[in-house]
Amino acid sequence: MIKKVSNKQRKINNKLKEVYQSILDERPHYCSGCGRSDVRLSFSHIIPRSRRKDLETNPNNITLHCLSSPERIGCHNLWEGTKEQKQKLLDYHQLMSYILETDTEYYFLLSD
Image (cartoon, rainbow, N blue to C red; front, side, top):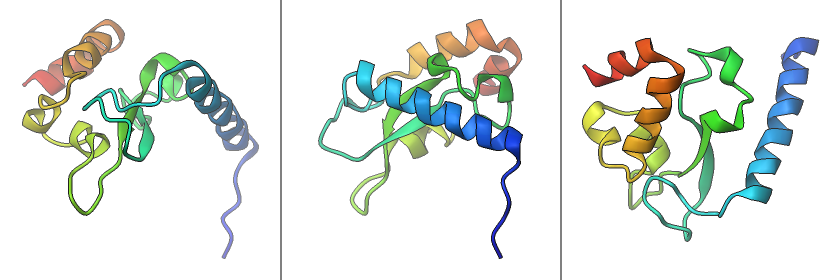
């Protein structure tokens, strides 16, 4: 069964593709969480899309994090993990500063 995509979601998906392409065009291709460029990268929302739909296509809310492989846990997964896992990332303080400026309530939820 093929799931239909609403016109609204189609527009969001198209906008997101444009934002992803501009990020690839404008930013260096390395993981901001570990600094590696020899790994597969993923677009990682700093504040989750499920929490703030209004930031879904905001390039300031998106960073490049590496994906997991059989040998290691990727920074994308670490960012979605526990506070201790998040703190291992090189960009942890930068991301938390962005969250503090953008969504104070979420910042304090993550800080507990």
